[in-house]
Amino acid sequence: MAFKNLEDISNNIRISIIKAVHAAGSGHPGGSLSASDILTVLYFHEMKIDPKDPKMKDRDKFILSKGHAAPVLYSTLAEKGYFPKEELLTLRKLNSKIQGHPDMRKVIGVEMSTGSLGQGFSVAGGVAMANKMDGKSGRVYVLLGDGELQEGLVWEAAMSSAHYKLDNLTAIIDWNGLQIDGNNDDVMTVKPIDSKFESFGWNVISIDGHNIGQIIDALSQAREFKGKPTAIIAKTIKGKGVSFMEDIAGWHGKAPNDEEAEMAVKELGGLW
Image (cartoon, rainbow, N blue to C red; front, side, top):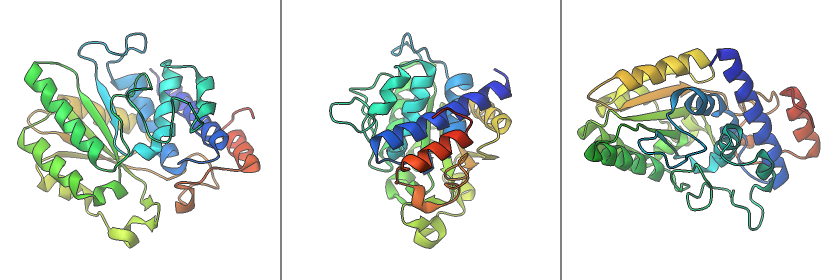
C-alpha cells in the first residue's frame, strides 16, 4: 500500500480516536494519537491477519501493553473491519464491549487483555515462545509506552525474551517523552532506551515514529533479523496531529470538550 494511503488511514484513525474519547467523556487521547502511525503500518501493511477470520492459524498477533491507549487499538480494529466504526462512540459506556482497557473476551481482534503496565510485554514474550515451541510462523508485536519502561516487569520480560532468542518478537516503544505525571525525565528517566535494550541482548532500531517509510523499513528489518528479539524505539509526539494537544502531558488522560473535539476533528480534515 502506498505511503499516502497509509497516511490517510492513520489520519482517519486519529479522527476516530477524538470522536470516541469525546463521546466517552474520558479516556487517553495523547498516547493514542502518538501511536496511530505505528498501528496503521502494523495492521494495514505488515501483519498477517484477516478480520473475516480473526482466529486464523499462524496469524501475527499484536498486544497493546500500554492498555490505557485502547482508543487507538479500537479505532484501528474498526478501520480494518473487525467491528463497525459506529461502535467506537460507545467507548467506556455501560454494557459496551469497548471499555477503558482492551478485553480479549469481548472485543474481536484483541489478542490480550491489558492495563497493568508491563504485563502485556511479558505475555507477548510468552506468546512468542509458544509459537516457537508449536512451530507456528506467526510473529508477535507489542507496543509499550516509554513511561511503562519504569516497571521492573518490563526488564524481566526483556531479559527472558533475549535469553530464549525470540526473534519472532518485536517490541515497539512509543517514546513521546511524557506520562501522566509529566516529563519522563522528571518523573524517572528511562534513558538511554536504546543501549538498555542492547545490554539485555536485543537488536535495536531507532526511528521517527511518525515517518511511515521508516516504520515499514524497521518492521522489515525486524522480520529478517535472526537470533534476537527486536526493539524499535519510535520517537513520537504525544497528541500528534492536533496542534493544541501536541507535546502536552495534560492530554494524557483527558477528554476534549465539545469545542475542543470539533476543533481537533476539523484540524484533522474530518467532518464534525
